[in-house]
Image (cartoon, rainbow, N blue to C red; front, top):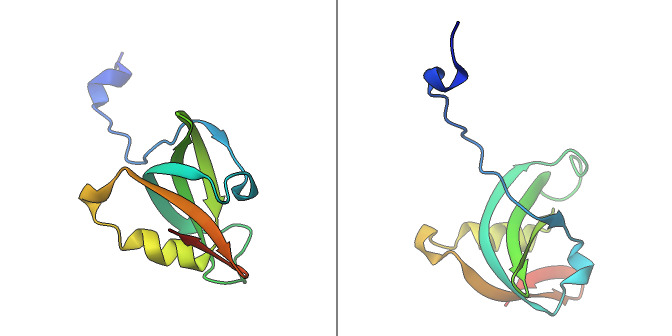
Length: 101
């Protein structure tokens, strides 16, 4: 009988850890962004970019996962160089837009 470990299967998806946190709980608070991924949104398919940004963050040393379809955050985080992670930031609300500072 085969052993699963003999298959040498590598998990390709990056698993984020921590509890989900609402973006409203972290607005105007310093956070550390560790990693991100962007996927097609299951909820906001017909609104905005149609994408969902998954962010691995920590606040006060505790890891959380943040989900958002905010176009400004999606655009900005894609411009961060790979060697720029982790980085500290504050997410602010500028009128109706969410932005990293």
